[in-house]
Length: 215
Image (cartoon, rainbow, N blue to C red):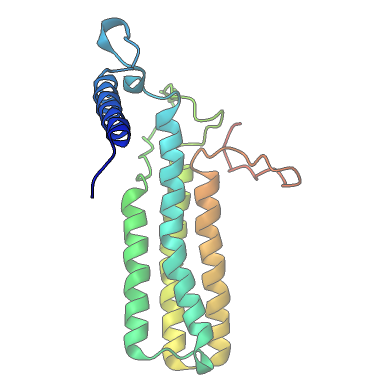
């Protein structure tokens, strides 16, 4: 197919323009547009304000959510089978998931600090501690509370599995209620003992205060 001279000139001009723009774009892209900082430090190198405390709050919520799903899976599975009696393979799978989640949460949660014994002649002076969103709990209070809640939840989940295997409807119902309450205990102890911010949605009540906690 033959092309007219005028059309050829237009095509040649377009190709040349595209090549020129492409070269210019590549050259511009190679230029670092990040403003220089004193000492060669860029804005992305500086840590975000309060990053560590916010990260700790996120870890606390992740701890609670890791336990939430396997336990609710157990509860809904018992409610979803006739008479609340799980078949053996299903019960084993659910039991393993709950146990693994609780073990992981207990390993992630900090161990309660040891409170030193104090003689009457030498009263202890509380050591200075970093501010924790304006609240302080007595040593071992929050951590021990979460540890107790996790241990109790495991015990209640085991009781639910045992009741399901026995097939007693009344015992299954009691174990279901106890397991739900145990899960609430874990969620609340995590919420109150992890330095999380107070809820700010209008209409929500104020959070309760841990015993020995100062706000």
